[in-house]
Image (cartoon, rainbow, N blue to C red; front, side):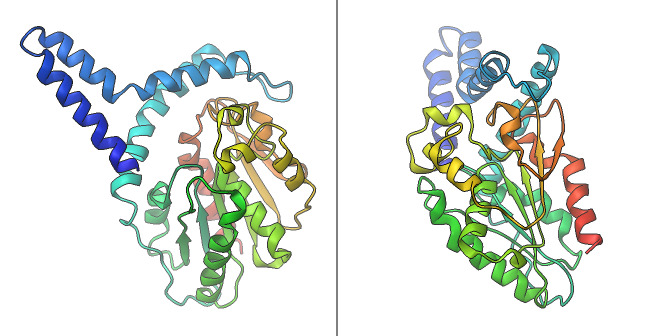
Amino acid sequence: MQQAIVFALFAGAVAWIASHWERSPATAIVGALAIVFGYSIFLAIEFVLIKTVGRDRDVPAPTWREATLAWLRESGTTPRVFFWRQPFRWRAEPDQLAAAPGKRGVVFVHGFVCNRGLWNPWMRELRGSGHPFVAVNLEPVFGSIEDYVPTIDNAVTRVTQASGGTAPIVVCHSMGGLAARAWLRASGDAARAHHVVTIASPHRGTWLGHFGHAPNSRQMRLEGQWVTSLAQSLHAVPFTCWYSNCDNIVFPASTATLPGADNRHLPGYAHVELAFRPEVVAHVKQLLASS
């Protein structure tokens, strides 16, 4: 699906240039750029929504300067992830499952309409460290979050076996955090995960969830029935929840936190960019080194 979107965008840009070049080269170039980079307009709208309907009494609101800088950086991050890494490079970094007794592993869980390619920089970072890891693909893409439980369960089992029975750290972005919590609820065994790290996960839903119609997007509606039900399941596993006041997908910002968790605010960073912040990577490395 993401490959088709990329090809369609570039085909549309080429067609626009071909049909307008003789009449006005400037119009041809500007129009083609608008087609390819039109996603940035939608990102801008999301940042305006943060400032208008996304106010949060528990988290300081971003200034317009912070929101603008976050929008510019996210406009650069988005094509790297959604136009290249996920459509064409999702197999580039294979899972690392060589036997490593006593080496704690990692299970990576991506978010809505993403795939394992999101985690390529993380997997390159861990490659050669000796720590086993698996990055899952959550399917069906537009199914229920409950559908992802067997996929996560299988990944946790494989990483645990590779590390000689040592429970892994589960690192999740966005909807992946909800999928991990659904897995914990279904498994009923807190010992299967050493620690869960969520990054920009809509633990209490998100305002934008009201516009989704797929089962999983409906489950992420702000204070919706599904996330409210999930909150009734207490997790004995330690959680670290990273969140930001410039998250253009999960807002109000405090919805990405959990009671009793180590909630860490990184102000000024957008939804996808937050997944690659050095502070977050360093935190996971510290968890691996201390276990």
